[in-house]
Amino acid sequence: MSPTERLRGLGYSIDDPPQPSGPTLPVSVHNGLLYVAGQIPVRDGQLIATGFVGEDVDLDQACGCARQAVANALAHLYAHVGTLDDLRMLRMTVYVAAARGFADHSGVANAASQLLVDVLGERGRHSRTAIGVCGLPRHSPVEVDVLGART
Image 1 (cartoon, rainbow, N blue to C red):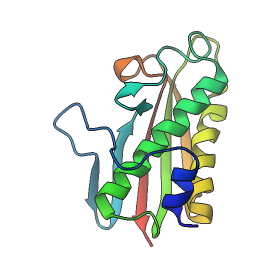
Image 2 (image 1 turned 120 degrees about the horizontal axis):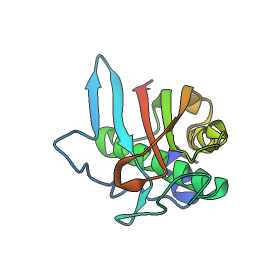
Image 3 (image 1 turned 135 degrees about the vertical axis):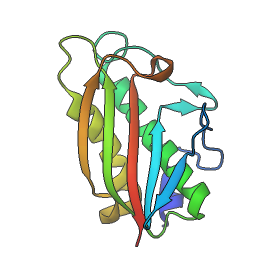
C-alpha cells in the first residue's frame, strides 16, 4: 500500500489542503529541502477544536488536532511534489497552546509523529521539538511545521 493510500485509509483527505491565510507559500523549497508552513487542524474549512490544551481541549482531542495538522502538511507536500512515495521527514516542530499547568506537550507531539511513521514507515521518523505557547492562530490548540526531502 502506498503512503497516499495509507493516509486516505486513516481517514484523511489530501486532495484539497487548506490554503494559507496570508501572502505566504504552503511549501517552499531550498537546496532540495521541503519546508512546510505551520499547519493547524483544519478539516473541511473549519478548525476541529479551539482553545487551550488542558483547559478547553483534552489530551485526546489535542492528539487528534496534531494528527489533522500533520495530515494537512502531508497534503501540501502531495500537492507540491505530486506524490508521498519518495518523501522523507527530517524535522517537525509541534506548538501546543497549553493551559497553565499542562505538561504533556510531548504526548500531543507523539500523535503527530506516529501519523508520519504510520503513513511513511521508517521515512517518517524525524527529529522533533514540542513547545508550549500562550496562543496560536485562530485559537488553534495545535500547530505543526515540518521539514522534509525527497529521497
